[in-house]
Each structure stands twice: as C-alpha cells, then as structure tokens.
Length: 491
Image 1: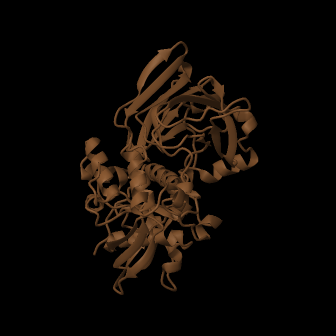
Image 2: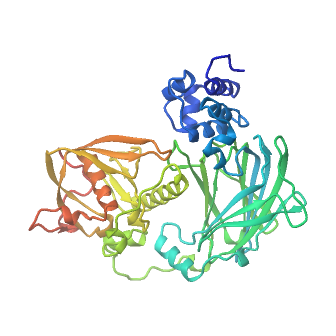
Image 3: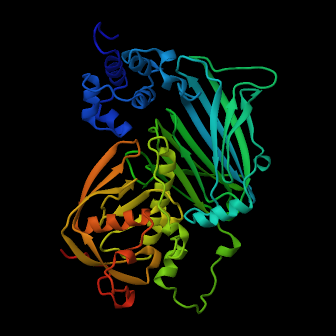
C-alpha cells in the first residue's frame, strides 16, 4: 500500500512492477519507452499520460489499480475524468487462453477462435471486439483492392457464429469495409444478459468461413490485450503438400522468424501445424504463412521467353511503377498512437516487399522503400543501411527538420523505374523529425549515404521522384551504362 503523502500512482507502479518480477529496464522494453522514464515515473519527477497509465495497468495486470491511482493523483475519480468514459468496453480483460484453429478443405477456410477471458477490472464487461481482415494477394495491394472492390467480403458469406459458454452472443457491427470487418460481440441476446463481472471468467467461441478466392496464404494474430497463452493451429489437406513458416513483430522488434518452429502432425487426410507461445508481449504480431502445391505450380519445361527488364522484375515483386497516381500524391500521416495497428500493418507490408526485392538485386549502397511504392498512400518508409546485419530504420511521418548547405552529387536508383540511374544533388547532413509508433516524437541525424537514402524515401512520401531533383539539362542513364552497381557511394 502507498505511504501517506506519497504519490499513489508512483507507489502502485513500483509495487506491481516488483510483484511481477520486472526490472525497470524489462518494463521499459515491453512498453517501448526509456528505462530512465520509468525511474522518473516512480520517483514522481514525471507523471506520464493517461494512455501510458492505462498501458502500464494492462502490462502489469494491475486490475485497474494503477489507472485509478493515476486518476486520483490527477485530482479526479473515474466519473470526473473524461478519458475514463472513452475506455473501450474490453478494458480490464486478460485473455487466459487464446486458440485459433484454421482448417482448409480445398476450397474454403474455416476459422474457429476460442478465448478464455477474465475480468480484472472494476466494472462489468458487456461486449468484446472482433476484427476480420482478408488479403488475397499480400504485397500486391492494388490487385487485392481491385478484387475486393469487385467482390467485397459480406457478412452473409462469413456466416459468423459466436457463443459465450452455451449462450449465443449478440452482435453490433462497428466497421463494414470491403476486406475488413469489426464487430462487437455482446454478452447478451434476445432472451438474457450475461455480463462478465469483475473477477469472473468466461469462455467465448466464434467462427466464420471465407472462400479461398478471397483468403490469402497467411493468418495473423495480433496481441491487443494481456494474454497468457496463444496457440495457432493450421490444418491443410495432406495431398496439397503444405509448407508452413511464421514470423513475428513487436513494438521493439522488427520482422523476424518465430523463435520456435510449429509442430507437425497428421490427422487422417490433413496435416496439422501447431504453434504456441506463453505471455506474448502486448502489440506483438505473429504471422503464419504457407504454400500449397496446386496444378499451376507443377514444374514444367522451360520456354524461351525474353529476359524481363529490371523495372519489370520490380513490378512483378509488387513495386508500383512510375506513372501510377499514388506516386504523385502526398502520403497521409498517421495519427499515433491511435493508428498504431494501421502503422504496424503498413510496416509489415514494407518488410515483406523488402524481402522480395532483395532477392532480385544486390543493394551495395543500402536501400529504401516507401509505402506509396507498394500502393499504400501512408507516411511510412523503411531504409536498410548497407552492410550485412544492418538494422532497418523505420520512419513514420518523417519530415526534414534541418539540412546542411553542403551537398554532393551521386547516382541514385529507384525501384519504381529501375531501368535507369540518375545523378542527384543532396545535402550531406540532415535531421529528420519523425514519430515512434507509440506517438513519441523523434529527431534523428543522418549523414552522407544514409542521408541520401532517407531523403529519397521522404521525397516519395511527398509525391516526388528523384527526376525532379536532378539538375536542369541532365537525364538518367540506362542501368547498363552505370558502373556503380553493388558498390557503396564514396565520400
């Protein structure tokens, strides 16, 4: 219990951190904040935002006590704090067990979700949010968008069913888009109400089906609530010779393989892949992908076809090419942290595009890719510095805060017209203002080659190509005439 006169919020934070056996550095890592900031919170030098207080409460499984202490320190209770009324109905939920079972029958994917929930808050919970998203062609957003515009996903075909124990759950649609749905599952139906009271547990189950022409070869679980155990099970006809792999991302880690491989078993005529993790961090995303053997993937004799141009190869890898209007538009910035999920999705798509592109070319100078280049007009870009093992630099809402008057001229290439290289003048030193996914503003300095890579991508987000930066009277040269492929710029 907090001592009289001591900050209640600071005391509760310290108490629950120590009870959970976390150091300040451990807690900071989970929340993607500085360890020194945790020290400032516990020593009352900083009080933090309401959003951070709620995140701390969820991360430390404090049952609302840290959040309430923050409100009390602010001089008001739950009823008098405007943000309290904005808390989602799922606030205070801990997911004790989250199991996703996806089964493919050769034409349709059938998904069943089982979740065992506990109300660790102080108020009854009356509904639970469910998201459904499909993407038939990952990495080809324009192709997927065209598909769903012509053939939108409908509630009728989903045939969503939801139960809490033996009771059917009511439903209220929150979002109904072509390839994305959100629905509140209510702890009530036409006959009765069964809210989840503080301290109680409940098992909810919901299921839906999507035909293979609208599903894609992937399934993703995002950890949006404190979760104790997460399991994913994928079942495919054995005759399709399934090949399954997985990746994970989080607020503090980039795209990486799953730390443990899925287990594989055979159940009658299906092969089942199962993967489990304990205590996944909040905002982590686990993505399972697969490849199935189908008729059009059978090996065939090679035929004499023209060698594709560099630009054609990039287009085949999902890179939008010069002439597309999305490359001329100013990208929409993210409202962070409110749009953290959307930013995560875009960064994941950029990571996947980088993986595809790096198989096609040796980027000795490093490389970058901006969201408009994969058909997404949002202010996100990734820059990969040169060198093996260099950590990618994720830039959200980047703008140029400072640039040096000292410049140099170097040849650049662009994935969106990769058949040529252009001599472009750029500042040697820049400072970029950008935003972390949790909303924290940043200023980062880049020099020489990294400054050039970053500025190239910032230009894309402003609807500009490097042709507009070239000096008057100069033109790009064919890539065949360029002699610097695979080499670093010289300074």
